[in-house]
Length: 376
Ligand SMILES: [Zn+2]
Image (cartoon, rainbow, N blue to C red):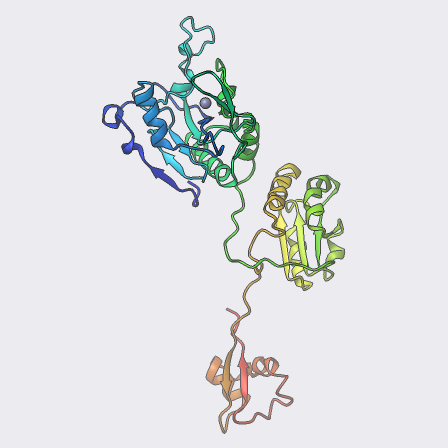
């Protein structure tokens, strides 16, 4: 499970739990269906409902044995685990006595697809009908998934698809399930978008509180390995306005901040080492396996407004230097013997202190010498 995925287990708080708790779904889990609850406050248009309100309605209002979804995700991104994955949720079944769809009389999706429901109503122009049949509009509020809700549903889908070895093709919106007649999960939630996101590499999680640099004009360059990466990088380039070059070699020593685009098959790791060696403060590779997956990462940085994706300083820390205060009677040789156990290593100390020593034969009591750590 992704480390930042928080799931609240509410299974035993749902109505009728003691009755169905040990039930088992007839067959394997083959996919995941995404729903919306189509619930919104009539006055404000804001989303309403959670696992308990939906389950209460399904059990007490409609007479089902249990609620219709395995997971419910609130508009705030809270994930509720409401019905055991091993129990078939009543989320997309339909009556098909002649089995004209070849879907086990319309129960195929219930039996083989997990149900994830977003508590929201993802359509514009929503309305409700009163007892006299008069239709009232509902304000267009929260008609698309919030960032928190999108993050949670993608995190949960990643977790479940990995757990059950489900391919993105088998993550579907309710309306894409054969035999269904519904707009669910709402016209503003395109299931193809979810699948596309699931095919991308794991999202980059930026650690909180890390200061990312803000390069000035001319301080940041994007290095592209080939023409193939120009289109994929255009969104990033437009957003942040870095310099752009294809000449990695010529970039050494010219820019303090460097974004290398694409995998090492394009711009090699040796080039990155050379760029760092040339004095760049930050050299960062942004790479998927190919231009398409690389673009996905660049576009996510654009969406997050993040020019860089990781802590700035990934260079090895400066070696810690010990110091030694010269005592009366010391020579560089005696200091080297004391510290390194070998008098002949005195040139190491001399070379580290050339700013204060001009003659290795002359050191003065009270001088503070820098003592490098010996390699190894
Ligand atoms: Zn649905």
